[in-house]
Length: 113
Length: 115
Image (tube, rainbow over the protein chains, first blue to last red):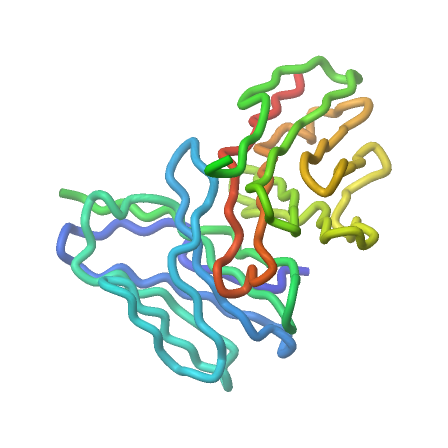
């Protein structure tokens, strides 16, 4: 049972373009939605996160859009750069405190120069 | 330390052997997590330790897998009688009391290859 579905599996974007990665969840108890970025040979690192009380969160070139009714959220990378080439994971967790994260299967992003 | 440290970084073992993977979390982080990353499968939750509470072992795939955390700090993940399907990158992460605001800090992982 995959609780967080992520698409696409891979993505190629030209430098300067917009990269969009989508995730959908099933469990309505989820209330925290982070995105992680992973470079080869490294562990994932927290990029940006959102809670369902807001529909959008922006940090620099990275924006999360959240649609609670559709149970979907997405990551937009504006002005994509070759240095953004990495694997991106969406995740979700429920309630407060120390809750484990459920991850999507990841999206390999390649930004061509 | 400055980050989460995992050792070894790579481990090749023969099928049927036991292996131990070590995780040294960030000092002061009370929560520690083990995940497994297989190609195309994302990150699979294995086990979670929080302070002195009983660990959440709900993600361990079989009784060949076990983990302990000594003194609320270092953790060891043990895989007994390894099988080829155990080949993966094993990631450890830790988080502070407010992990939901600051997220997990992952180590670089141990790449396990069972031959």
